[in-house]
Amino acid sequence: MNCAEIRSLLHAYLDGELELVRSLELERHLAACPACAAEKQSVHSLRSALQQNDLSYRAPNSLRTAVRKMVRGHEKTSVAREHPSIWKWIAAATTAFAVLTFVFRPITSRDELLGEVIASHVRSLQADHLTDVVSSDQHTVKPWFNGKLAVAPPVADLTAQGFTLLGGRLDYLDGKPVAAIVYRRGKHVINLFVAKAESAGHTAARGETVQGFNTQRWSDQGLHFIAVSDLSNDELRDFHVKFEAGLRAGA
Image (cartoon, rainbow, N blue to C red):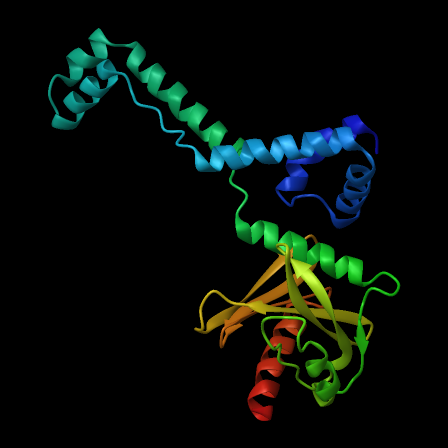
């Protein structure tokens, strides 16, 4: 892709709307092109500023007065007769607000996190990126993370349930180190990312499809889990159920 194509796709890329292959092509271009990388940073900064600033608009006093009269039910006929442009102004303002809301839809932390998860999953499928410690023994994989993370990621042996443990690796999400526990079902790889949660409570699993990949997210006992794979939604949900059951059985 050339610079013009890259810049035309930046908004869709930042919204997480590009297909995975095109996103990777765009990222490779950004890594090699300082001008486009600067443009991407400029767009990102603009979006951040729009999310933080108050974009409310105070209606003119004439409009406020007219609306009050309509609400009270007084002088409806005279307001419409004396201020015929009010209705056009309201329609135009409503349309403009709707357009601004669509164009500058906030990029939530959830969108950004899932985008990073998908990118990390895809990178792991490249040669020599899947595991740092290769083992199907949970008692080998779990202690490998000692001293590398602030939390101890749980590891379950799910071979009997159809999910083979391949090992684990140290990865990064949101600029922080996290554990990635790697499983395989048939020809499909599952990356289970484990990080410290904001609270110690339990949240039920939530499934989402992002850029063609399925994810399951849940929290438990101070840890946040995100499983991602090209498995079907039902199979990945089954992995989550079996993983939690495996942890309970090993507790």
